[in-house]
Length: 138
Image 1 (tube, helix red, strand yellow):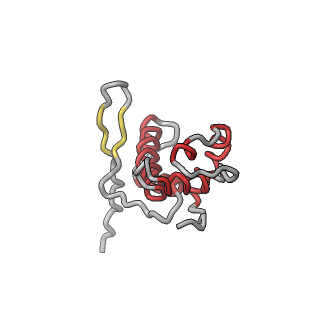
Image 2 (cartoon, helix red, strand yellow):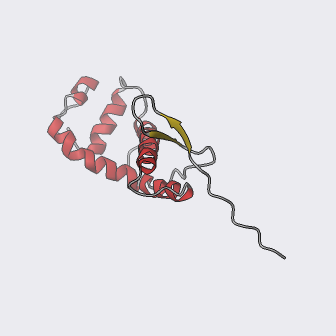
Image 3 (cartoon, helix red, strand yellow):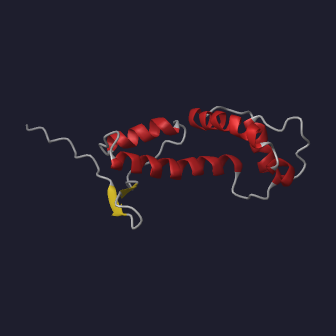
């Protein structure tokens, strides 16, 4: 009996970008993200699946497409899409650990949280999203 050759890795779809000479990576239709896995691990799985080489234009394009798609999806899943919903803004502020000493009784008050507080908390937020840290909020 002859062993069949391994299936060829799916190749990413490439579409030209009118603004730059670079190519844009399009997520393969057969890539199904494991939503409980960290984003970084899922990107590495995608890169291996598509045989992307680090430091290439295609790898960088794939990374932009992947995080641009799935980071937004993660954020919207956690905090919703209604920018006028007070509960979502309060949840975001609590998640970032900012505004604890403020009443945050309106979306405007939430939006006025000090930019320095938000900047220092932003990295923590990214790490929390990527590691699926349970914030205890529902």
